[in-house]
Length: 134
Image 1 (cartoon, helix red, strand yellow):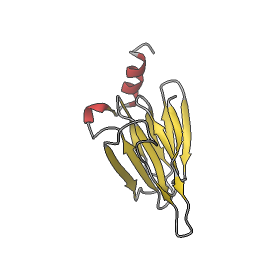
Image 2 (tube, one colour):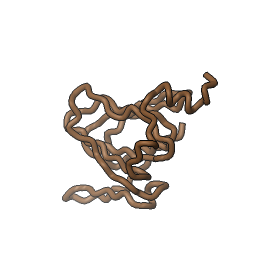
Image 3 (cartoon, helix red, strand yellow):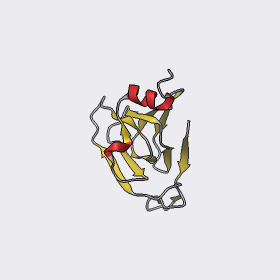
Image 4 (cartoon, helix red, strand yellow):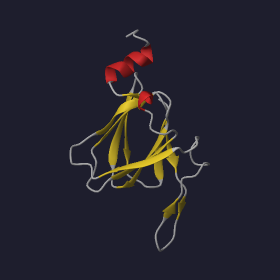
């Protein structure tokens, strides 16, 4: 499964820490940045895969779980540190669950929003991975 925890540089200061995401931190040009917040208790986000786009997910505040599936294996990664990001390459199904109160999920994407890049149905995702051989 092509995922990776990325350490985001952290500049420590008694007045508060600062972290920076620049081109040397992630392996793609940043084309879009968005964030999820005020996610109600029990709600889930994600539930899709991308054909081309890559994303870095960061828990800026609080915590949440990212359930990842590449068609063969499933893995759960808990994000809860603002200086660590989860790099998800294309072709990985993702679901975001178990948001803590006040959680904020930052997403740094390799492309602008293109609806055709999304696979939003899990069965279609599996078929796309295995060309109907399952």
